[in-house]
Length: 219
Length: 219
Image (spheres, rainbow over the protein chains, first blue to last red):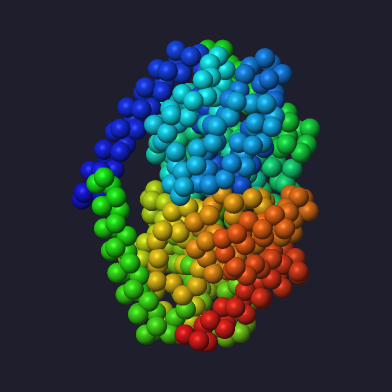
């Protein structure tokens, strides 16, 4: 099985880079947060609101954006004045610790929170440690409440679950209990209900900011 | 670069299996349709409505369900009386022509439409030909109108685009023109606007059934 050997080599190298990233982030007083989620989960909109909330608390944010193609998301963050950098994978289904490090070194960032918005994919990113201190999945309400049952490796991998687009809970018949039951079968991570369209949803974003602030103060 | 060599080997083997599947489907008078899309795009709900519409036209359907884990979707199709079979990839990000063939041989299906619901993933499935005669992407409205700009290989790969959850166009500020502009940059495939919740949406599903009926009659 040569594929397995090669895969082990790739993963082994990734782990080395991830370890090196962890040391570098600690030196720079940076909390790195890996934001994962399906395509269209609303990662960028959530992240922008979160960065603004952290800014109001005098915590600096920088953003590394992973996408197959385009620089749509980085442009949004640049316009809002955040240090940001685009990684285009040109077809690859995830970003790895090495490519993140190359981006990080260009950003010249320190004393703040580095958000790494992963490629939209509920599968492959869960196999690549980026050296982050916190792993978040954004799960959008319209994706449906059955996803934790199907995407077990990803839902097992994360430290926190951010439900996005919660303004659509009624319109999509989203069943919170079924979602939570599926999640609890594999992970006891906290769940935050958010939306960038409602006051209630912003309350959820502030709760995520509380979690990140606590983690950052402990770096 | 040993990875590249191995990847070429895997792809080469997949192409052989895909060719063999094509011969088998032709012999069995089967149109195979590969349904791809992001997690939560509404593939199964769309597919169930489509199978019912084809049934009303006296066209038989069978379904192979690809998921990392669970048999939630296969159970739905079995309950509705369709020949169906679950493939659990246990973490793998796509299904390939060989695994589909193993499932197909168990189904013992002929003279109808075989739907292969791929793993929810907008990236990796576009690299694995399953021997299908038609490739459909289900793109859900809540995913947003920018996805053709980001997931170029997938949006280039398909023969038809099915917009799902169109009842949410207004609630999500989905911009049809921006979506179409991104799509047209890489593909001239037709776009069908569907929803399983509205009469207008069912009209779109009937139009997809028209396309499939025409293709099936020509097998």
